[in-house]
Image (cartoon, rainbow, N blue to C red):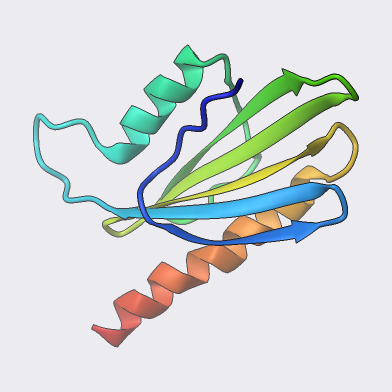
Length: 125
């Protein structure tokens, strides 16, 4: 059994040809001395066996990526999670599928599209 770690308020998902993509969003106030959702996520993900990886680019104001592999009876599944922040919103995109069923560029593109939501919200204010 794999324990999913994520942020509150699931805001959508997509299921396409052997891969599943989900997004999660949480608002955070930058309170001194209090761990932010991004740091909490990172700590928990590493505890569960995720590996922090380099995206090669930054999504939003800052971002981090994690990979997690889960052996199943049929194949090994891999989850690539991109955690990013824009202003006071922390967002995450996760794509899970069989190794080779998706490329990093797909996940980055999905994260960039998701980033447009908090940007649009900020412009409305």
